[in-house]
Structure formats: structure tokens, C-alpha cells
Length: 315
Image (cartoon, rainbow, N blue to C red; front, side, top):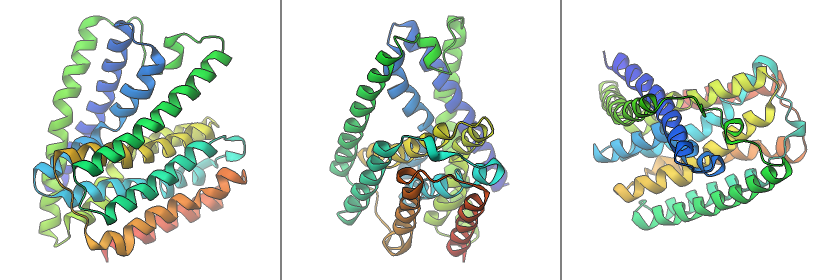
């Protein structure tokens, strides 16, 4: 029953996050907010809402290890699993992807996150530092997006955002917002409570459940996106999606969650999980800087490494 409730909570989270983003995007555009601003704020935060709500709920429920495990586990899964599976299916031609600057930002954010963990537990001031770093990332992305927009001679807002629907009626926007705002906390509560019960029933720590069950579950939207991008031969979308998601996980989710309550750092993170996350991030360097392609052999290696990592955690 607890596994069914965890699955139900995850489905509610994913659906609620999607409808909230669609409702918020169309409301923002209806109010005259530029699509460029919406894409950098509403969409970015909205797609990370499930992880954010899970982290906040975990802290309020007294299981902060699940919150930290979710973020660290998701970042590892995003690279080894979310990039590994589509590379294994059809290969990812990353040779033409220009992601050097955002990749370096992700690595810098990873080092900042681990450095603050050594000064842990994560408190309110750690959260402010992470959110300040996020502000710098968003500012850089905003300037970059402006330059691209100017080069494109002004693309219409509806063309810039997949979620935008200029014909969406007002009642539907309102319904999407209500469903999203109600569904997110409901799904987060179900997933956190059932995951905690599973951990206790099987003698597994909440941290390990966060690193495995919850992390993989919240990485499913990214996995779906990258698989479709690989099938459509859009490797830059797949790679950019993973790099952006990892930055938001570290800077936004823990940044906001630390303002809600302290997040202690289990010694196991320093012994193993932080370094696996960092190593997985550094594995991308040859594909970013040397323009190597991710063929099926690379995909198989990534997935195999992730399976070994999960097996070591559960062992």
C-alpha cells in the first residue's frame, strides 16, 4: 500500500507541476509579462516545483535527510540515467552543443553547494548564499536570451514558449492554477509520508530513500524530455535540460528549503554521495569541451554506473 501511495503522490506531483506551469505561463503572458522573463522564472521554478515541495514537506515532517537525498540523488540520476537512457536508445549527437558556459556554472554551483555543506547544517544564511548564486545565473541567462532574441529579430512570445496558448480561456487558466496549487502539496505530502514509511518498514534510512526512490521519481520529467529530444535529434535540448535542472536543484531547491528549516548533512554524504554527484558532473566535461558524441556505448556505460551506484546504496 505504501508503494502505491508513493506512486500516486509522484503522479499527482508531476501532473500538478505541469498544469501549474501552463496556467502560470498563460496568466503571465495575459498580464503582459514578456515571455523571456516568464521562461527564466515561472517555467524554470515551476518545473522544479515537485522537488521543492518534497524538500519543504520533508523538513516540516522532520525528515530533512530525504530532502537533501532527493537533490543529490536527482543530480546524479539526471546525468547517468536521464542522459544515459536516451543515448542508449538512439545516441545523442552532442558535438554541436554550445553548453560550455552553463556547464561551468553548474560545476561552480556544485562546488559551492559542497563547500557550504562542510559549513553545515544548511541554515538560512546558506540558503541566501545559494539563492544569490541563482540570481547571478538567472541574470546571465537573461542577458544571453536577450542577445538571442535580438539576433532572431524578435520572435513572438507564443513561439518562444511551448506552454503558451494564446487561445486559452480565462477559466481554464484559473483551473490550471488551482489544480497545480492544490495538487503539489497533496502529492508532496503523499510521497514524503509513504517514502518515510517504506524506509522505516525496511530498515532503510530516509536519506537512502531520498537518493533512490524519490530522486528517480522526480527525475522522470527530465527523462521524458531527453528521450523525446534524442528521438527528434535535439541533443542540445537534452543536455541543456539536464544542466539547467541540476543548477536549479542545488541553488533554488536547497536555497529555499534552508529558509524553511535547518537541513543537517549526514556524514554518509561526505563519505560517498557528494563525490559521486561531483564525479558524474565532471564526466560530462569531455562531451562539453571536446565535442564528443554520446553513442550507445556511452549510454550503456552511464546506465551501468547508475545501477552500480543504486546497488551500493541499497547494499
